[in-house]
Image (tube, rainbow, N blue to C red; front, side, top):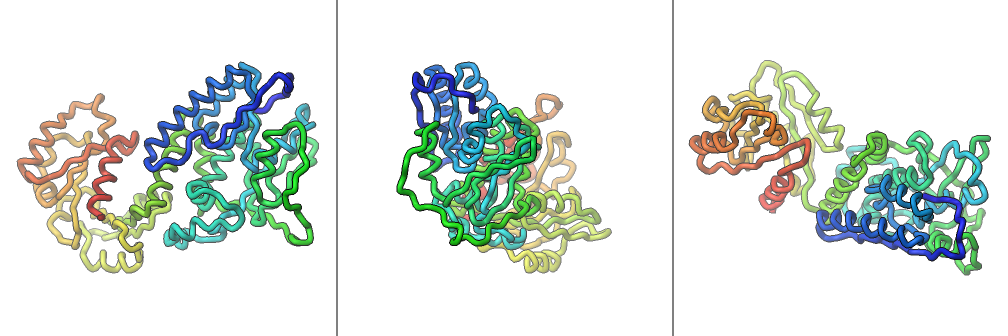
Length: 428
């Protein structure tokens, strides 16, 4: 939130440099974020000017933070290069209406990649940003365009904009840091070499500019400045950020938290997934999985009630999954007969929904007898159903005393961490 500074001499500046640094465990990082928001809210009561050097603060709690900033008349000055560029373009223009802003993105190391190419990238490749030297987490975010998505959400709160007033343009040279378009059609851009020293200094010294010995930009060194449309079909994180912004509420917080977990897993090179989806005729499940950028092959069996081992063999060759990845095979629907055929699986999983009734193990014993894991899904619906978890467990254990149970909700995420931890353990 940037307002006219009515008392620059009386104000003191609080520099918020990475209030909650990247942690080893994502859950700890999320806790640090929540503490960070409380800390920042308390700071605003001190009538401080705040230089904000992370984007997650406003992504997670932008509505709360900006309300408090307005309440106490506090300015939040952006340190992030793109937002600093917008801020610099707005100096002297506070009375003029913004029609649109353009945040520029380099495109990262995988600009122009297809989905198939992205499914094979390594950590080492993702950590090689073409223009900027940054920490591991933000470098991965830049490679996936999630960083730009988070910047879009941050810009909404900093400059009081609607989602349709914020656009992203790919600019591989990273010389034009961002642009503002005013209602008369004129545009202002802030340009310079990709170096964070200038935006950091400007946040400290605003409204003054102080002479520096930083390297200067030379047009002759960059005869071609190019711009491209962002590929949101391949790099879906950017589209997810816009979706979260439209949804409001805690959607952006959930997006940020999910990204923290995903990046952490990628940096630790933990698990990659691929899916073979069996069905008689439809492609719906495979399409949903593909929309999440997970490699998937659909096998339609026609009137057949189960997958055959040769079908799986051919699909594996076509998928060519990463070494040490986990291959999930969903046999045809919820039919019973697949449990009687060996596909060479290491482990078998039977899934029962709380909406199906706790006596399913007694009705379809072969499914439970041949399985290693029983996942009880949709547990978020338990308060609304007449479903007895203990009876289900008892019936299932009568059929197979060695069953391991996981209670999960795909809607709320409950139990997913335990399931994922088990998968990691089995993989190792």
